[in-house]
Length: 198
Image (cartoon, rainbow, N blue to C red; front, side):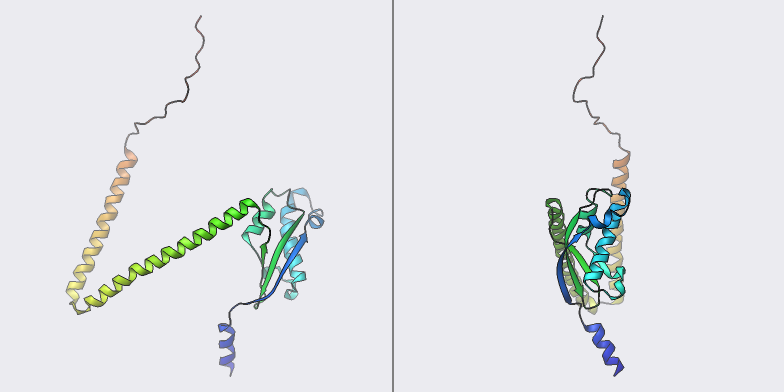
């Protein structure tokens, strides 16, 4: 009976239990500290506010995960000039961990987030392409099962030799390129000023 309980705990996915949007007043908090600690105090104020309003057990600040874009928004103008208030979205999952995200993105952050999403999509595509390349190799290995061990060893050695030769060739090219005399010197865009002749 105890085994079934532990299995159900590990199998349950993390679902959003609670999701809310808050406008957090930061100026009230960062006015309590010196100027050079304002942004740091703002981050702590966000954590405390969310812990209080999302009913985090024992108000544990370690259970609150702040989004990278929210962090960038607070620190954008430096440590001395954080925003006076900020609009955030808090999402509490079944494990009790609260993720805090920025709601209103500025133009620069919108661009960054879009670029990051494109990067993650391209990474996924590359991963799929690699998996597709591995599949023919596996099929080739299945075909080669009928060969003897000596033939397989020879093929593996040939492949290794080809790879090593390619690596050595690229290393030689890099060394030659590194030690070549640079002939292209940058010419000044304008003539140098010279002293007037008397």
